[in-house]
Image (tube, rainbow over all chains, first blue to last red; front, side, top):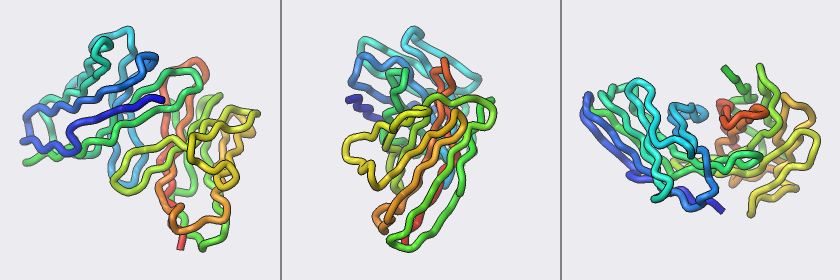
Length: 112
Length: 115
């Protein structure tokens, strides 16, 4: 089955700086790659996603890049703010009736 | 946007009893629903996939007789944890997928504590 690796497990950045979280996946059949933000005690919230026919997608301060050949995708957050502090998960899916395989998560800490 | 409602948000039960968790898609028809389990400070692990009107498909290592899943309609799936034990204490999260869509919408999760 699919295996998703995520790094780093913890990331601390100064407010206003950029944060980058990286993930790799193992199954070349995966074609949908979402990123979720999870706050303590809550369900994951989709922040951005990308499909395998696209190399990059941006939504204001958040961007995701996908390299299908290398089977890795990254989340980029610019101009970080205190409210960006949370646990972020990457995931991969083959679509259809396939569920999501999640990475282990990154605890992002924004230092004031 | 698509909304998934999950209830209850928290439940405490005695060891040996059963607990039912509901997951409803409020404004769309969910042909497929997914159930995940998340232990503290860990990732979400897929437990099972349910399609409306058919038996759920369980991931390897998940006991189907312990975690009963019913997906009786296009807007409701339930997970029943039978004969719960303290090791079943976890955060259970459902997710629904709209027909024809790539996206997954998650519920807010249920914190189960078995004492």
